[in-house]
Length: 178
Image (cartoon, rainbow, N blue to C red; front, top):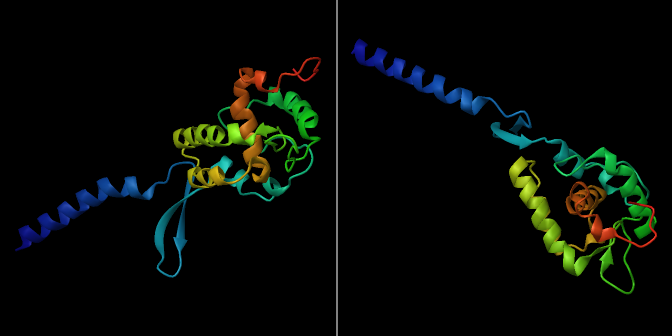
């Protein structure tokens, strides 16, 4: 009887010691949260991108500010170019909507052409980086670009800009932006 009891206890200790580290340690971009009233452990995303997309600053739809987006396609060396393009396209208005075309938002993306593509490209990045924004990004498919918050519009710019490879999308003769 004692042997079976000790064997069972030893077995449980071995199982628990191998299983607990995998369960107990969140990755650097995650934290544990206790949800009341059941007090069960739940992993919550807390990446920089997630926090910025949900921030109060993301809801500010006027004026130039340094980009809230700092993901895969961001590089601070393009901030001056982004500022110039943003001024030229919308006079720093994230709510801008062209009256004669589907151009929308601070960077005047053609909504009927770009919306689905931008969402798809941002989803790919979110899946790779596990930033916790995939669900929110899917909702953007049904929302005109000029209604996207500052974070998502800036992220769209850098996603399309692709470290300068996408500058042709904003080319304008005699422009001093590029």
